[in-house]
Image (tube, rainbow, N blue to C red; front, side, top):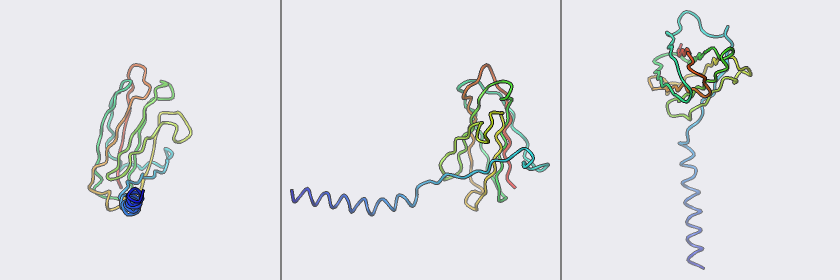
Length: 149
């Protein structure tokens, strides 16, 4: 019993020291501001990426911001009339991925527009963007635009 007590105390002490160390390196999720169409940046926008997706498919994109303090993402498809549902996964460098669905703005309209702040740690590091055909009948064309400014 005395030996078991020592093992239990040692385990508690290890957890006390290891737990906070692991918590210090735990990934954080990036927060996004939901934009309306009139808030999306104008002429200096990056060229859009246009593609087509089917049910269950995932298309992969990447973007490396080299300057700026904001990252803006615009993702659109004809969701309102087609009834198709696409999802966007945003994978920032050294952060938890964010799963973004069409109704993030309270509407199922095939438009997702977001902005987040960039830190010095975000610049010159790869961000990944996955477009997934969550519920698609036939094929669905879409446009993804990623811009830093």
